[in-house]
Image 1 (cartoon, rainbow, N blue to C red):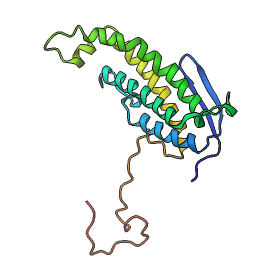
Image 2: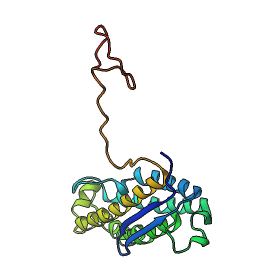
Image 3: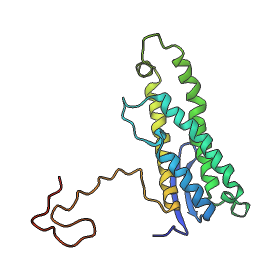
Image 4: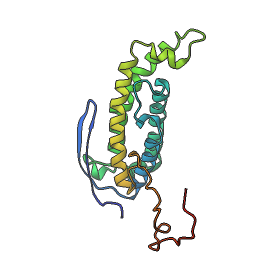
Length: 198
């Protein structure tokens, strides 16, 4: 299946509201979308964490590096991903900058120094994760990370569609091998003398 000429965009960004419209990506935008998609799906910033899972510092650091990576992608592709002729329309540049400024920047601005201040009070012999869990703002930051994660995951799904890629955020269980038939693509059953797969 080829890459779509148009993609319907509809997702919610905290403090901005719903972003919706039609994105008509060109080749530069599709390439940029794939690069940012790979960055998003391989980071802690979009992985769902349970209440006691993960480390807050690691999650914030993931957001921090994402900020710089996105800026590098924007620099690399230049105005082609946000052309003046399409100002006011949905483009890679408009989506990337909106998410950076409305999701990533506010999270880092508020919580990076607050967490650093708490980390500075960690007594000797206390593990960093344990110290984080004792922080009075731990649950609040986890909630903010959850909201951010949701927005970034929605962006990732839009980028996947633009790039013509599968949604790799959805866990898929591989289908078990066909025990009765032959190998993949074979319509012939195995002979009775063949070994069964484990």
